[in-house]
Amino acid sequence: MNNFRLLFLTGLLFLVFESVAQTFVTRNGTIRFFSEAPLENIEAVNRQVSSALDAETGEFVFRVVMRSFSFEKSLMQQHFNDNFVESHKYPNATFEGQIIEIGQIDFNSSGEYEVAVEGDLTIKDTTHFISEQGVLRINGDTVKGESQFVIRPEDYNITIPSRFARNIAQEIEVTVNVNLTRQ
Amino acid sequence: MKTWLKFIIAIALLILAAGVLVYIFVYNKPHKDYERASPDVELTAEELYMAFKSDREDAESLYNGKVLQLTGEVDDVEKVDDMVIAVFAFSEGFFGLEGVRCTMLENHHEKALSLQTGDSVTIKGFCAGFSDSDVIMEYCSFP
Image 1 (cartoon, each protein chain N blue to C red):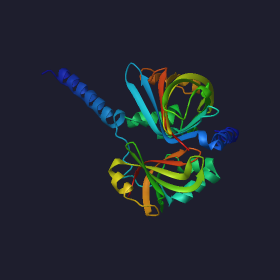
Image 2 (image 1 turned 90 degrees about the horizontal axis):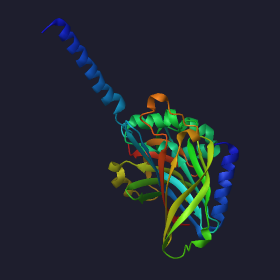
Image 3 (image 1 turned 90 degrees about the vertical axis):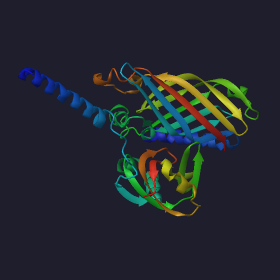
Image 4 (image 1 turned 180 degrees about the horizontal axis):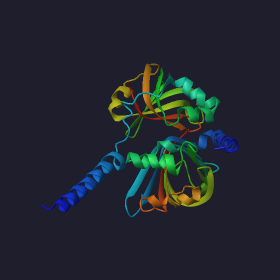
């Protein structure tokens, strides 16, 4: 991540932090991805995802340390880090976006809301605007957020060599689960 | 049995054995045993955190993907679902206390949970990277 993006993300997080009473955060969010291909299914999980939601503005961010993804098979983990996402060059992924129409959500009473989330997803320094659906479940001082969507590795500069074409899907299912606590 | 048939059977068995070996040692090779791994670098938790705060790119090239053995005084031990995380804190930031977060291997949960704030510990683990607020250590154990 270049310095400008880092500065921007830090600034965004600072802005979110400023509205203390309505900020929800976690450092143990979960992101899973699942690839279904003819030869094998591959699943990985990362349980060290930092995430923040500003309940007033709807700003929502998460950041991921790529080497924290854990795979069932060691070889898959090695290929993921060394060949596909190149964790040594691009150690982090981020999402910076917004929950649409956040004003319609009452964060002071329990409830479940279907929401639209949109913003910039950056993997391997390649950014794409995504717009997805999700669910927010509010219960006291916690907000559980969940979203499931599909990304294409090639959109994020992830090249799958032809010898892995039957091992790795062209579309990867991503599931985000964050259990945010009021700051 | 004819010689050529014996030869073909021998070749077939060799290919089968090679396939089994590739499956066991390459495709299905076990994850690295971080509990037994020798540390690549030994330093204090504070030195590690300050390295990332002062020159992130340099620290990433030095420590990411390495087995580190850290010493320091533990500030907190968090239990999140089935994870136990030992925390060395060095500043107050966006997420509260920020520093080095060590996710402990399951057989070290009990000892980690018995730690008190200020206890001096040595923890070994895999440095996954920096999340902008914390250094993330995985597969951690007490050596």
